[in-house]
Length: 86
Image (cartoon, rainbow, N blue to C red; front, top):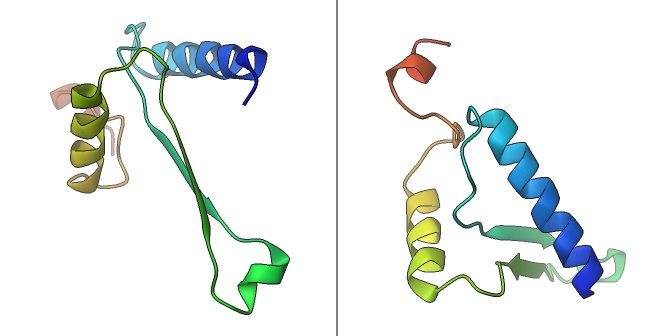
């Protein structure tokens, strides 16, 4: 990924996080993507991609991955007010 693309992606993630979480500042992220090429579908081949900030330490990365593995799809819920919404 080019430096320009990664900078734009990180700015968009930070902006989205702040919008979804009442202005909170982004402290780290893990993006994990999964897919397949048309050629790989018949062989059940998969492709994965993981992106993290260049300066993010491994403890933050592994902590986020561990947290994601134990939560439901409501990844942005934070506090009692969010639990009452739905």
